[in-house]
Image 1 (cartoon, helix red, strand yellow):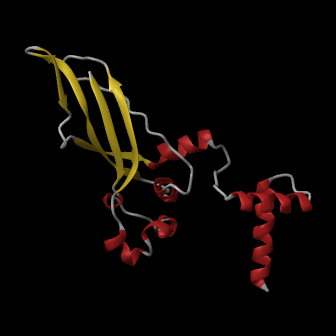
Image 2 (image 1 turned 90 degrees about the vertical axis):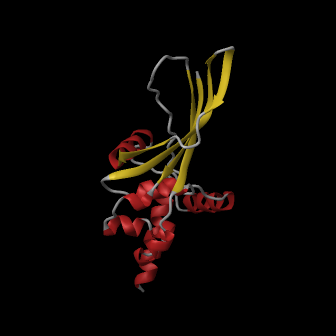
Image 3 (image 1 turned 180 degrees about the horizontal axis):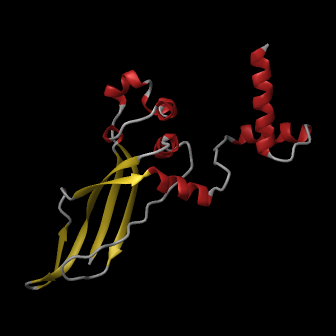
Length: 177
């Protein structure tokens, strides 16, 4: 049996980016001309699994939690991608429980156990569309929510989406003046 832990990292240097994707990555890595110093691997998540006893080799599924929270670096990165793949690195650790010469044996998963995978961008996109159909998620401070609710009520708007759309339209009109 194995108590497996896995750190999943994104390796952004292992792929190219379109101009549209580069614009979406501006918040994370700055302008493209700075990417030689700002484009670094970063952690997506930590996951784990309990693997039942086996002989020889086995395959397991590791749960990868996905979020649409734009406060999370990985969500910003994934949202910016339009096509191609997401370059992932898996760093494994954990505890192996086995039968030893004197009964029960315990050892650590060696520190150098890792793997790489190129996950299609469409996998993340499909998952987000399934769980957040035609919507997104935006975290706001309580005061902002209260002000937005007051704005919505004062104008007879039915949703926060309508309130934000109204504010954006007013802002665009103001900028044109």
